[in-house]
Structures are given as structure tokens and as C-alpha cells.
Image (tube, rainbow, N blue to C red; front, side):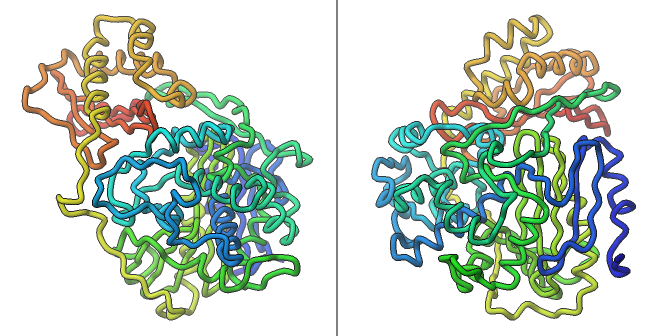
Length: 498
């Protein structure tokens, strides 16, 4: 039966589904666990029971597993991480706070952000993760001092769970969470499901060129499963959202209603500003226990998480006061399915008759800008990478792509070749420099902008414009470049090369 208060999903999604963001996908509206409307596109057979990679939505399962262990007295969120991972060595000033479990949970540990690199580590063996712990963990700000999204931190939490539970993280989550909830479409291993949606990947395309989707080989479980390893379906994620909305705990579960309430409370505020249209007032955004929390002055609370993995993007969000939930999956890398999901949810939130959230979670978010005394010096590897990449760019007009790719391959983390091969990036740079003309000499006193010690932005000027370059380093030795992007700027025109 149609629900007249709900948007026409086909019309709402038309721009997204016709713009080749992904080969196929699904978006559904649920309320308190009941799917009210859904819309699918493409030819990959999505329906309400189709399992797909939920990627970082897995983090909410990981956080609830930690709450279970805390309730059983096996850990405290103020425990030092080294108490549970004794091989850990932290590379940070002696007067910085001790790294604690709550810092990892809330994305305030000071670990460098790592999305492109972390997404490629799922199958890593546990002993290699342990070796990284022992090799020295660098921090980019004092623990508890800011927000920085870290997959590595949740991999460490998964290892804590495995050691405390005396069984693999994946087995613990299935035994304590997945099975008691009856989530039959939710598993860490594709072979345990009758079928799963196919994922696709493509390289960036230059303006005027086509870029084809190719099948993405799925990764298997490993030490990084806690960051994003789950498969699930719309039906199961609707049940998952309804669990947090109702806080009605099924028989056999070892978590409580209090755990589910706490899991939706803000731990690490990072933004306060005007609410996005069509909402009114202001919003405070924070990270909680594997979930993002948005507290609106006029509309209550939206709880959400996105997921991005090679081959998939996923988004789940629910409005605590009205019970409306939106779940979306698109089977293309970087397919940005969160945007249409929020375009569907926010008008439902705006129409709901609620006032200021008064459930006790009165958070005051603030700026994440830190005083100079808390800033960390730029990593020497970051500055060295800037220098070498500039050398690479300046050698582009006089060298072949293959030669340069071989000469500079050691600079990059392993995900770069998998995401978009270096020689192809160099070919794009070669074409860009045809438009820009001769490169101008670099100024002797020029320095890159480093908003974090592991990131850098800078420009290379040319006759008819400039290249704007950006890098991020991976968070573990040898600190290779995990992100390398370039924009061509010519007057008012800007083209993203890769």
C-alpha cells in the first residue's frame, strides 16, 4: 500500500540513477523496522534481502561488541590501549595524554586518517597488525584533542575484542549480536550467504572520455574486518536501526537497552553550524560509538553512518523522534549514495512534529582547531613526499609515463596501484600540461599547506594556470602516499584529474 506522506523515490533518485554513479543499487524508507517504500535501479538484482557490503556501517557492530565486554567487566573505556595490546608502542610527546579505548572508539585517538589505504587492508593477518602495533604508532594530535576518522583504530579495537573474548572477533559478533537478532543476511564471509550483490570499480575519466565499470574482486575476512567487513541487506539494516530506535533487546542477547542508548550518544563533537535545508535552526555533529550523531535544535537527533569499500557505498540513517529510517546501497566505488539518502530523509525529519531534543544528550560541539602548542610538526615523510611528487610532476613533459611510474613507485602505498595506477595518473598529468603550457620555476620560500602532519596541499604554477596537488600518507611505516590527487585550474575553470 502506498504511503502518501512519503516521497516518490523514483523521481527523487532520477538524477542519481541516470548519472552513472553506480551500475545498480537500492534505496528504502523504513519506520520502526518496517520497510514502507523502496526503489531499485540497474540490472544486478537488488531487492530487500540482497546482501551487499555495508563497509564502515560495520563499526556500529564493533562498538556494540565493546559495550558487551564492558558490561561483563572485561574492559573499561578509560583503559589504556596498551593494557590490552601490550606490544603497542606510541610515538608521541611524553606530555600527551595516554591513548585509551574511548579515544579509538570516538575517532579522537590522533591516528592519521586512512580511508583509501584502510579500505584495502581487510584480509591482513592478525600477526601483521600486531607487528604494526610493535613498530611504533604515530599520532598527529594529542589523544582526545580532535576528530580524525581512523579505520586503523577500529582494527585495533577488533583485536582487543578477539583477545578479551578468547575467540575471533567475527565469531564473537555473530554469536553475541548477529544471531540473537536473527540477521540471516548479515555475515562477514560471502560464501556463508546464498548470493551477494556484485561490486564494481572504475578509474576517473577525463572530460569527454568514458570510464567503464569493471567487476571488483571482493576481499576476504582478516584483521581489518572490524572496520567494514560485513555484508548485510536492507531488511537486516532496517532491523538493526529499529533495535537502536526501540531499544527492545531480544532474548539471548547479552547487551542491554542502556548499551543501545549510550551507543547513540555523542562522544567526540567536531562541528556546530546551521542545519542543512530544509531543516531549521542549528546542528551539532559528533562521533559516538561507531555512529555519527547529529543533534538539531529544532528537529531532534539523526543517527547515521556511511560505508565506502572498493565496489560499494552504503548509507544508513534514522531519526530518533519519528522512527523514519533510510537505507541505501550502490554497487560502485565512490558512488556517494549518502547524498540521495539524506535528500530523502531530511524532508521527513522536517515534517516530523518534534521540538528540541531533550533526552539528556545535550552536547556542545566546537571547532576542531587547536592551539599552536597542540599542533604537531609536519612528518618528515610528508615533506619528502611533497618534494618527490613535485619532481615527478616537473619531469612529466620530458619522460614517459612508464619510466616515471617505475622511478617513483616506492613512494606510494599499495592501494594507489589498485585504486588508479600511477602510470595512468601520469598520463592524465601529461594531457593536463598540454592545456597549461610550460611550468614556472618553484619559489624558493614556498611551503605546502599541511592541515595535518600527514597531509599536504600545494600548487605548481604554469603559463596558463596551475596544478593543485594533494597527498595523504598512510598511518603506518613506511608511511607511503595513500592519496594523490590533482586538479587542473585555468582561470575560472577547474577540472579534477584524479
